[in-house]
Amino acid sequence: MKIYELINNFDIKVCGAANIEIEGITYDSRKVQKNYLFVALHGTKEDGKNYIKDAISRGAVAVLTDDKTIKYDNTVFLTTNDISDMLGKISSRFYDEPSKKMKVFTVTGTNGKTTITYIIEKIFENAGIKLGVVGTIFYRFGPLKISAPTTTPQSSDLHELLSKMKSAGAGGVVMEVSSHGLIQNRISGLEIDVAIFTNLTRDHLDYHKTMDEYKKAKFLLFEKFLNESKKEKKYSVINVDDSAGRELTKIVQGTVITYGIKSDADIKATDIEMLKNKTVFNVIIEGKKTRIETKLIGRHNIYNILAAIGCAYVQDMDLEKVADGIKKFETVPGRFETVNAGQPFSVIIDYAHTPDALGNLIQAARTIKHEKIITVFGCGGDRDRSKRPLMGEIVGRMSDYTIITSDNPRSEKPELIALDVEVGVQRVKCKNYEIILDRTDALKKAVELCSADDILLIAGKGHENYQIIGNEKIPYNDKEVVMKILTEKYPKKNGKN
Image (tube, rainbow, N blue to C red; front, side):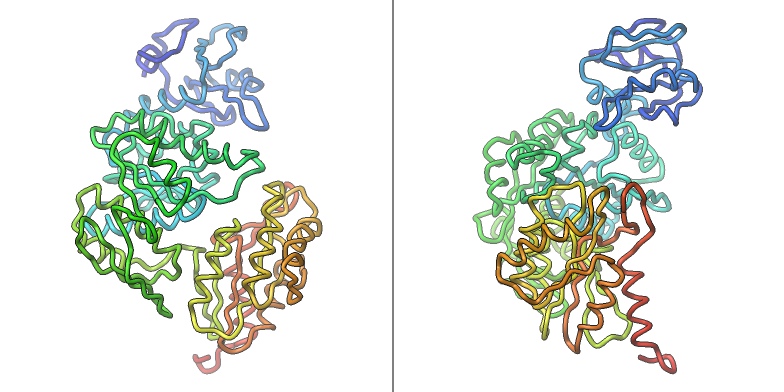
């Protein structure tokens, strides 16, 4: 694509020949190839301007920057006031605007995003519509499966990904949108059909500093990106049992569909029954009741299902087919995922790493008949320190025994992170706890503590297959580690446990 075609009608000035052909776009100088456009983004740790020379040496023929003073011979310079916004818009055009030609469902909020995207995928698959999924665990469609370095990919990567999904036969995409992704314009150029808001609880205050700033970041999905979408029919699906959700309904433009359990909502769950291996409830829409049965456990998962139903509802899907898809849905990797090696107690792995999610996890476990609940968890380093004692309080109050361990300490000392958590545990006068910093040793001790009919909760890492210690990413997976511990303790005999 010629430069002038790429930037037509955008707020970009050209210094140099605008008829040069661009064969690729990247913000990473290491990925530059011949005839590429290099975009000098401002990162949180690095500034793309420092890599312009390297990009040119690798074959970049054009550079997009906000610095009008930088010039190199034989290189076209494009300047704009908002690089991150323009990266998304030109990337969408370069990849033939894939989001215009497919359904785009987006989900934001603190908790529930991953589960909601997986439920939506199953509902639509059950109706014969194949969706790509973009989020915390993988970016995937059919045989395409990429481990997710971030929940929401950078905009140029996103539009390239959507183009590949569309070419492979995807009718649409359902994607998680993080607060970081919204602030950094990673979904710029995305044409959205549905935006879902789940909830707002404490998280990422290391980045956003205050809850108000965090909330403003989440609201950008609706106030900016959904508003800018050129789709003919656009919908907001919002949880009005959440105070931030109620606030959002008052400021969002366009068609709003609300959901909830306690509040008067367009989509409301009633007659809830929490059983050992399933949850059943009625969903009421426009006065009509539909019975929902799901293998997912916990009240928080009812909210996740209501959000998914809201997305299907605004797409005019038959509610009986929707209910059938929900019934067929099994689980999400690392979300209330059971591990069974024949042991006489339950082992559940979950990604819960915020106070609210951790509370939801333990509350969901408490609905299952049990003797004791033993929880193993830690808090990540170089992240919001203020949530650590809050998580300690929750586990100390709700679990029968707690083991505080390490969880991606990064550059912080694990023992200091654990002490922050311990403050909360002691605040609720809990004495049934210990600190075991080595995560494998912590899991071994937890298994030893478990008796028949206990529940062992392993929280924080979920699907993750690594531990970040210092600057190293060391292979580690809770499911694999605890399965090894369990099979050694409960070996199979004659093919039976």
